[in-house]
Length: 80
Image 1 (cartoon, one colour):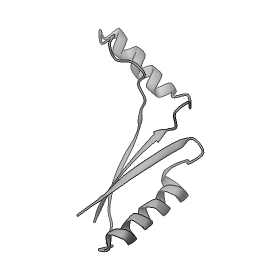
Image 2 (cartoon, rainbow, N blue to C red):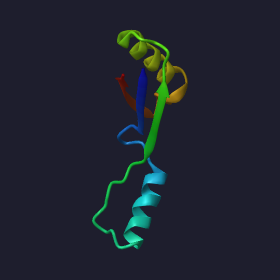
Image 3 (cartoon, rainbow, N blue to C red):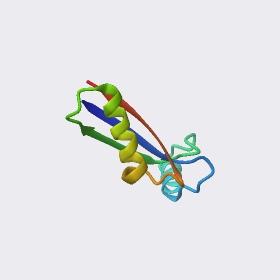
Image 4 (tube, one colour):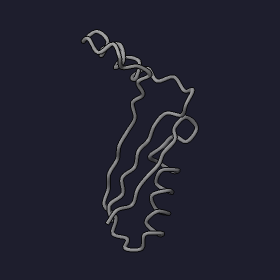
């Protein structure tokens, strides 16, 4: 099964990379783009065939390694 994980900084956490992107976009003439936030997208293949067990594995991966849950939120999808 394929898992797609999206990790973003929590609302209210300073995002310096997002600000740098926002300023660069403005300098390139895209002044209408604001409140830019950047994050991570991780995809992985799991040998697991049971969707519920796969979801639990991904949740554990996020909690233990992939996301810093103090400052980041994550969400994921399990596909075929």
